[in-house]
Amino acid sequence: MPADIPCMPIYGRHFEPGQLQFITTSTYRRSRLFTCQRFSWIFVETLRQLRQEIGFLLIGWVLMPEHFHLLIRPQPAEDTVHFMRELKKRSAQQIIAALDRNRHHPRCRALLARLRLPPTVHSDAYHRAWQRRYVPFNVFSEKKHMEKLDYMHNNPVQKKLVSSPDQWPWSSFRFYYLNDSSVLTMDRLA
Image 1 (cartoon, helix red, strand yellow):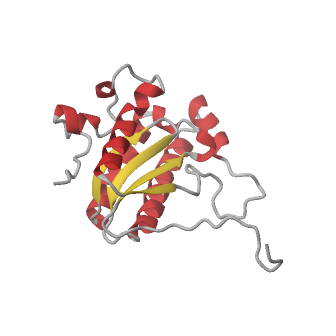
Image 2 (cartoon, rainbow, N blue to C red; image 1 turned 30 degrees about the vertical axis):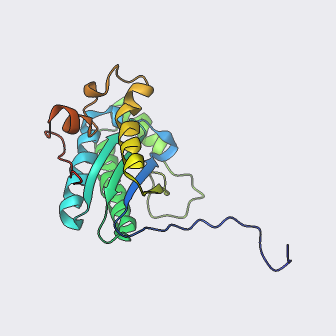
Image 3 (tube, rainbow, N blue to C red; image 1 turned 180 degrees about the horizontal axis):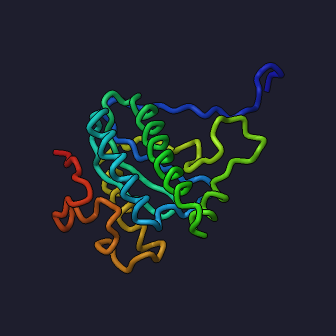
């Protein structure tokens, strides 16, 4: 290898127009924020608001105690960056504010301590709810689309949170298989 070419990985994101994107991200330090129903509703409402503002198609989702997966089709594809930044920022602000207001409760105090940024981080914030990065995966086929939906819907069962997907309220399973849109309505692809 020539000496002038560095051996560093390149982390580029390519968002293909019209393609579905399967997105994964985790909470800061894998904190189990979403064992709290109130925080789960904050996430859902933030997702709903952004969907109206930005106009992406929501094909599938699951919110787990310490991460989430989304299957979306943003228009334009590059809006994923803006959407993810806003989803994480808005939900984090509300969750951290709620924890701070209730710091007299031991669980809230413990979660705030876990979300506290180390003093070496140069930021105007003291806490972080989400990891900075997220992993996007372009979904190019109907087979992969169905694979990702099945993966999301079965994630709570695989993690032994419930015995069947219909018992987990924080996913698109109930919309597709029980015609229940009480949490979120999905955009069906033709």
